[in-house]
Length: 161
Image (cartoon, rainbow, N blue to C red; front, side, top):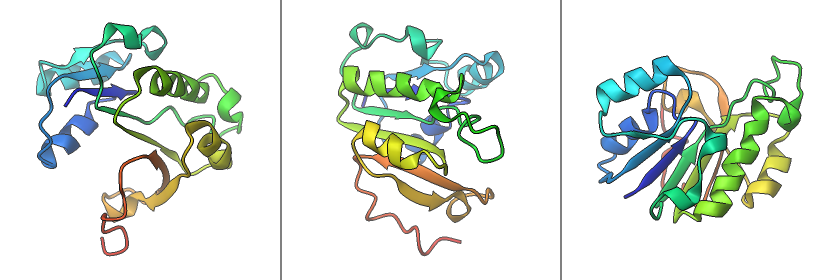
């Protein structure tokens, strides 16, 4: 599989794919934080870092099977000023949308914090969000929104501790 991970961080998506036994061919990552990139390269030297999402062009990549990402949430979070999708960082959501339309992946997954713009984001993405508490899968206790065309019906979201 060819993977494009936007807002890649320390490549946790790659770790999850490995844990699931997904055969990753090329893993393209868009990330700008130098420390996160350093961690990713240490763990996965073959990651192809594309830098700033605003510079990523679908025409420069092969067919992408899975587009994954979680755009910045600072302006969406209830703990912040609430500039929403018009905020400088959370507005990068539109870059995810641009690449979703350009890349036309077989599968996609978008994640973000629970927020009051969820319905609007669903309209843009073209699918309704699924709300899952991170406490079901990790030490975090935060509700998250997920937009995807992957069948989530088989996840044990109600039986996890």
